[in-house]
Image (cartoon, rainbow, N blue to C red):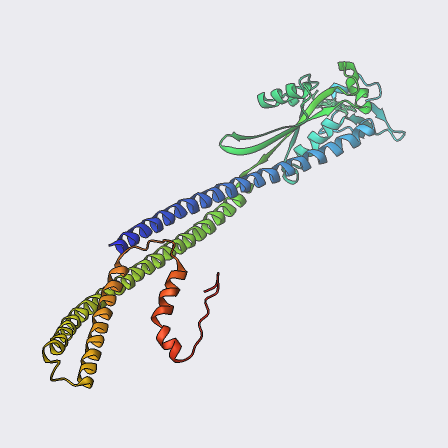
Length: 368
Ligand code: HEC
């Protein structure tokens, strides 16, 4: 009965442990999946941001170069007419000794022309803009306007992911500060060195990054599903192994109990069957001595005596077996005993045999 109870308790424990392990494993897998996917998206954005910065820096280098030269003189043509915004510069238009007409190009104009004419090569366009415009073409949109206002308050970079006409774009904008070289053309607007003159905004289409990251995301989902399932299989396997071990243990325990029950029955019947004839033997021999003492010689009496002693021994043996069986059924109770007393009894019981064989037995204090 207790075996079955133990079995059910252990099985319940096994079920609970397996259940919580599955719950834990699911949480770990989900957490790892979401974390990996989020990291993947962050990496994609970071790469796009780096590309935007590269574009920005390249344009900036171009502008600084032109600024350092105070603008660049190019032949005045139909496509490159003198810039009306530079009319306040005295030598905007010059003539070479050979009579060629040259006009001054400011950095923003120069870059705009490069972008207009070589747009295919340029691909990602940086837009120069300001809150105080010289040229209306450079007018900021609402997002750029907000960024420009933030620059005036000390912000160094604005960066955002935006859907523009359904296309995801990463927009990055950085301020442009007024330097010594800029004053030649912008001082008349009231700018001083260190002022935020405006900013450059760069838009990067995120689709190529999203495609790469969605491939990586798919890989993450697949590997996580695979390892998640392997984990589940391992847990289920361990559960069934544990369960079959428990069942085996129960079967072994039941078999053990059954066999010990059989032994008990056997011992009881043997002791019972033995005890009765032994008692009869003892009684009859007693009667024999009592009623026929005269007919028996000395040897006859001695034999009867021996029969009685032997039958007595059988009776006491059988009783001991019974005692042994019943003690086995009792729960174990621990109590202190006087070992000396026990040894004393043993010594007395075997005194005869010990004396016969001249075995000396010297009890010592504190030793057995
Ligand atoms: C050679 C003259 C010249 C120099 C040098 C120059 N700029 Fe300009 N800049 C212009 C002109 C003219 C425009 C407006 C017309 C255009 O876009 O071509 C302009 C436009 C801009 C704009 C766009 C907003 C607007 O007003 O239309 C910004 C921002 C700007 N410049 C910043 C700078 C900074 C910063 C420097 C120095 C690093 C600089 N510029 C050097 C002449 C110059």
